[in-house]
Image (cartoon, rainbow, N blue to C red; front, side, top):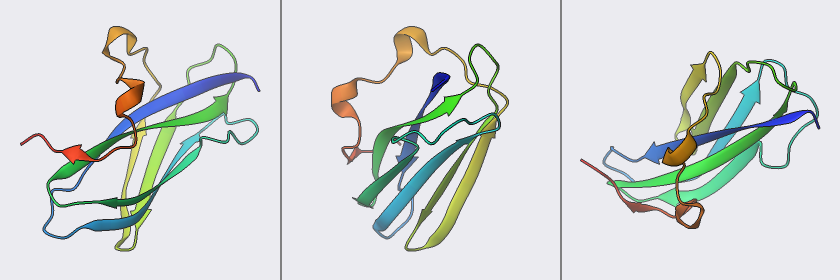
Length: 107
């Protein structure tokens, strides 16, 4: 692998029904071989809950990495979100113990 690019994402259920069988996939413009944490599956997110996830791709060493995250579920494709490049999140990184667990969402 060249260099890993991580993306932290908060999935929020702001609708009126439980979201089920969610799949989030991270892609990079300069992606090398497929990283095992490129795609994450979440069984469900209850109404008014959120879950923080971490996705990872193999990218070109020491290069800016345009990325895109795609989220789908039983309800179809929800959203594709892109970013020109990843930024170092430094001290604001989410607590690893809180990843992948639905919690009540922020208003």
